[in-house]
Length: 424
Ligand code: HEM
Image 1: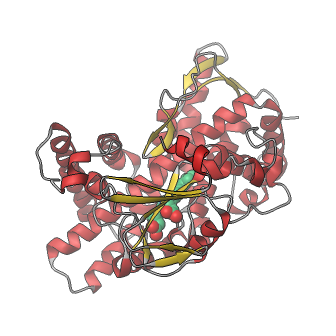
Image 2: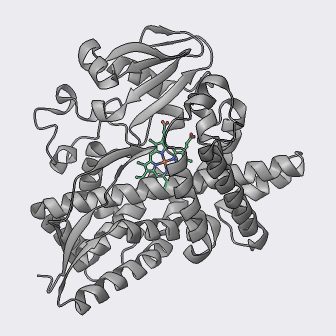
Image 3: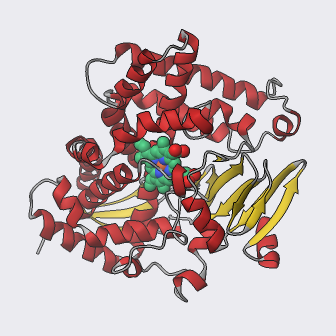
């Protein structure tokens, strides 16, 4: 329906669902103003708030106003560049079980295997977040991630009754499932909090902030749980899914695979990956940027006008939800050229992507605060895999992008792997 309207109406139009009004906009001047807007009057959309409540609560991803600002000030510094540089060794360690597992499987199977990579990649992404942000290993965090994923599936379809009527406490089967998962995740996070040691990490920063504030125990616990949940979700799924799309594209494009492999070999020269070598991997950066253009995990950037606003000369009344369709912008031939649907990382070689036409990490003040972290994590995993394995898209692969809060391969990514025999 929305696609049809886009074709019919062009880059800006409104529509409504019940009493909820949407402004669907991909016009560059409006997108530019959203990018530039730092006012707290432009917040996250409250549409689907009731549906998403069990997953996000009042954490950083969905909160607005002063509450959001407070959370951003606590969490953002934990992902500044110097902090990310200090996490590189932990990320490299997190990749070792996957590499070992795949090597053993290839060896056992006569030098070639056909695998669905998604679960192993999720395990890597989960381990990275657990170790770097929460000081707990994947084993400890594993249950949390499994339940967060179940919660994601449970809340990925709009709960129309709750949104239209506010009856979010109606005990439907789906609500009951989401509440049960919500309780279990809360319990597990509080266990990790109780066992946390002296390590300086994201968790300790969140705990420190609550100990300095004068809120009651229940409010402090909600603050901790909702923000930990937000990081578990934000940092886990999107990175794992991007890595899976990226490896799929490299499997399809052996010429880029060879280029990245040669680059990793040249930059690292047999030494372990470190923060300096990551910066030198230009081809790999371009490949990841192009993956995020073609398969941005966040299909929409959503906002709501919390007061009357003017963006790109357009008057937007208070309450209107603004939806920026990221893929539509990323696939616009007027912005990217006639080869817009092709995988061509070269397009990122000499120009920085335009702020208004490239939005894989969102826009403006609410832009993803984990993007440097995510890029390091992706580069580490892909450089290590590429230096050990030759990838081909498996004949079993079925292309199945689907939107479940984020755009993921519904049927997974199947690759055929053989070992790299000799590097040059
Ligand atoms: C490839 C991986 C990732 C992608 C594609 C991605 C994408 C996004 C997008 C589209 C948003 C919404 C921005 C907006 O509304 O303008 C976002 C927000 C956010 N992301 Fe990421 N993200 C990734 C990885 C991460 C990681 C690894 C973390 C942390 C460990 C993280 C933490 C966050 C947080 C906390 C927010 C909310 C920011 C706010 O509202 O102030 N993300 N991300």
